Length: 414
Ligand SMILES: [Zn+2]
Image (cartoon, rainbow, N blue to C red; front, top):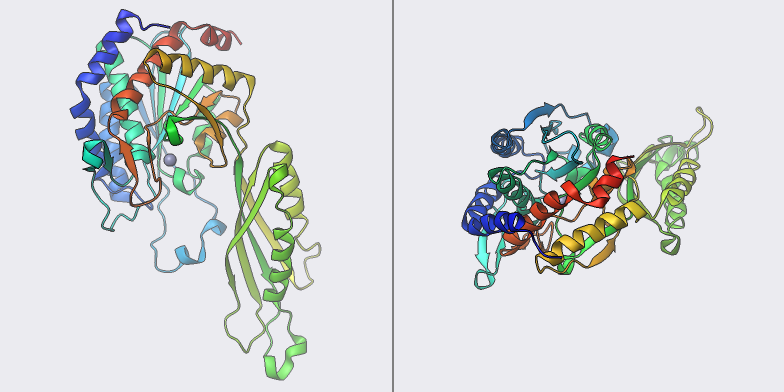
């Protein structure tokens, strides 16, 4: 496959802006958006909303839902200020009615400490790479998508797209899940700007993920005076944890991880309260259901008896298996990449992202179309600088090819 003259022109325009892309990313990275830092999230969101309006999009801000309170870990409860639910930006650009509708999804939050020493984008490795908080996950990917859409617009190439920007992906997208689901149902293709896997690979399947908290209530008693009257919540939780540890079966695609823990208050009092938090991973819906049943079965049946065991859980990221539709979409992306001289290998991962939620709504989604780089979530997180241009070009060519491709027609005629 060769690029058309028009595609070539769009790609040349992107390449001519390499310095501008880098400067935009530098500005974005310097705004701290980690750990629910509201002023930074607000500032970055404001800048991106301005660019979306410049692209002639109808920009809406949707209120964030409250996260279930049981998700808060002991460390979060102490000291940290309560998290303010963050809104989600939904910017819709209508090109022409008969073109496929593409949902582009990015998250503006990072995992980094907004007050720590890692705050700016710096070139390293003789200028081949740059390191900075959120550079690869995923402010670099967001910049690539803007560069692609802006270059398409300047060449008067119409597409139908919606750009959704949430601010809670790194903590499970509980605040934005409803908006993600609603928008997924309105589109034909999903593109998520998570960074490429090592070697620039495209994730074609992902495990699902869920969170749980198990709370145990017992009866307090003084250890020396009336030990026999006590019902230890800690001992019961210990038995539960042993059972949880036996549920993991990686060969069947089921993983249960327990931690952190909480329990008791003093060594000479039988603990009347204990709790554990945990995370599950599952390969498919069947594994998700099995884990749900097994964990729910740990709850105490009666209300009055002690110890009383309460289960809270939410499987917030459904498994993202390789469906025939996704496979076709992935091959389509590969054809676009190869036309640009970029290899696009496929891989699978146990990691999760918003692509899991989109695809669970029936939207064929590719979710590693952001930038290339590595060391995500670490303070040596980096991007490959040339990938700013490469990956913006890939997104632009994909958007152009989707306008007329056979996979687009298949999907729109459903
Ligand atoms: Zn991410």
